[in-house]
Image 1 (tube, protein in one colour):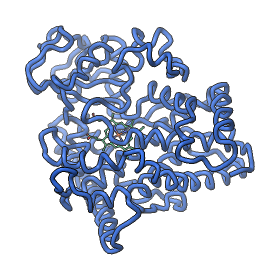
Image 2 (cartoon, rainbow, N blue to C red; image 1 turned 120 degrees about the vertical axis):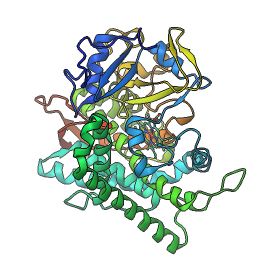
Image 3 (cartoon, rainbow, N blue to C red; image 1 turned 45 degrees about the vertical axis):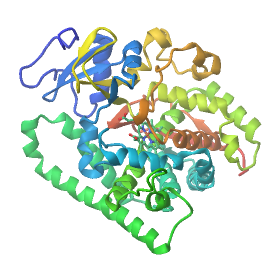
Image 4 (cartoon, rainbow, N blue to C red; image 1 turned 180 degrees about the vertical axis):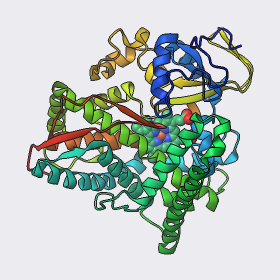
Length: 459
Ligand code: HEM
């Protein structure tokens, strides 16, 4: 079945296509292969064979939910010791997926989101306090570091009524270091050939300590909530108290623990990367920043933006979409065949066979995005341009039943924060900065510092 799928020419018996393979940037290596090998290719790396797909037609076919479904493999399966059958890592057949999905989906309704809005503003105010001080002192700000603090504070407050105090601490919160530790470990497990795993005993022990730390943090949160008799109707209240709309069944204590960690992690890592890339592009493209800023001034004036005013920042939203096109911060998702089938009428797949969709390449397919696909241009997302494109060509949030449940949450938060930052600061680009992308399952611009100039003294 694989015979027709191209692969790199030099194959080493044990190591596979290791020439040019790096343990720290497996995704970017795959992008390089993709450019050479075309819309579907396979790659042996680290003792495993992977099939990658990025051509728009092939990806659209993989979106057919009747024939394909999410595949839980690779980095995701490596997270199961931490989050088990939590929403993100559950196998399709596990009953807790449907149960948690149905119980938690209303937590992302319009109504629920409107209730989170003031909490998001509160977290953003911590960021701007911090950035005001930096701007006043003429210091550069650490964009990815500060965006991670912001998004962690946002999900902790809106989800669990908790304040990690990220901006007030000098060192990373232990929960964050534990989380980064488990993500890095999960990625490393992918890139280490099985025989070498035995050598990782020390790393495994550290990982177990990280997991214990995550569990402890969450158990404290849950205990405090139970003792206080309920919060402000946030995600945790819903997890603890809401039954399934039809059966009334509730999530078990063990499952609640898994969901809390899932949301704390999934709810901030990717959004933080998305905001960081967007700020990089805004700093590098002053014309785009000026247009976006003019929109914020026009739509918001200088008052505190209300919930409904966020979605009205159409151009800011396009900046975000265009950033997620070039660097979708969750850069791949896996699809498996539900039964024997033929992908796009060309590639036979047996039941259970799977392929990785390489989103950054899908988002650069010249057949869809044109010869200038590498160029940053938010106008690609104006309504007319979007209508002219076929479906399934822009997939930063995955696809189908297992697509991102937090999509609206992330878009609201990120648009709100970009609006607030554009209104408040001029972003000064450092022309010497070359974009480098770090990988720890998610993507982040490495070492991105920006200088800020305070624009208005307003709110
Ligand atoms: C699933 C991307 C923000 C919670 C996913 C998937 C992608 C994704 C690609 C599908 C993964 C797969 O098919 O294996 C993103 C991006 C975000 C973002 C790019 C920000 C820009 C969020 C936020 C939350 C969240 C803010 C929670 C508040 C989840 C959960 C799942 C998921 C729970 C699993 C859903 C399921 O399988 O039922 N996300 N996400 N994400 N995301 Fe997000």
